[in-house]
Image (cartoon, rainbow, N blue to C red; front, side, top):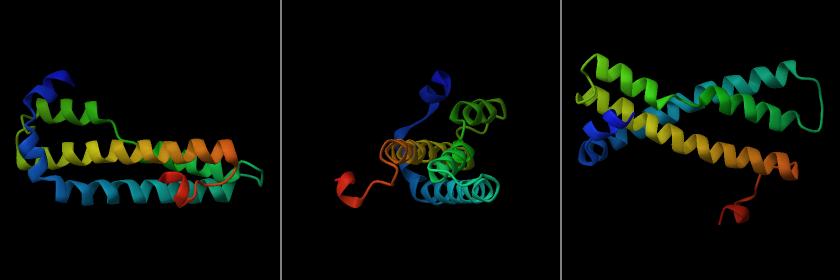
Length: 120
């Protein structure tokens, strides 16, 4: 990961950020939704059912940035436009995953999702 980070240039990441954000959102929405929906179907009713569904959806939506970096380095595609979009999307994906984990923590602690006022 360190070697991949040394080869990355912030200006290249910024150039591909618009496409990368779109890729990251779509790459999170599908696995999160499917994971949460399937979990909802198979789990018995309980006080923590929603939190369990969010947990499974989040777990399925998280990516492995180091694996993507190493694979692109091995293929010598890290510096390509395609590689920059993949890595930028993985970075956005990780940031969104941390937000989901924060929501999950609040959901487990309080029993309900945080309101808009809690986020400000």
